[in-house]
Image (cartoon, rainbow, N blue to C red; front, side, top):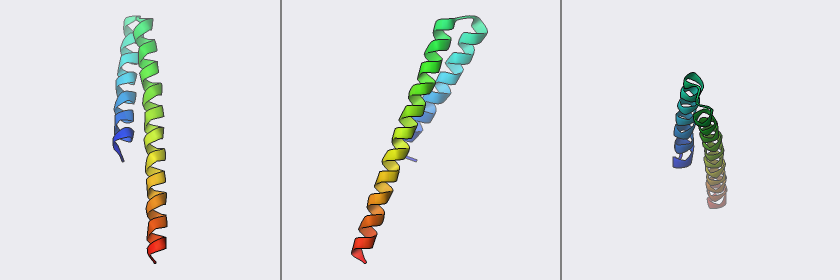
Length: 67
């Protein structure tokens, strides 16, 4: 797991908490903000996974070239 994946997970958790608090307190703005944070966190996590996969592919190519 890289920094982007970790930060994305944290954003998702924060967003879920904000969203739940907004729903329970009747604050639609806070609930919407939480939903937005969750979405942004998912995107950041996916970006991090993609970045990691590309890095792994490059390392695999490097190992094959050395052989």
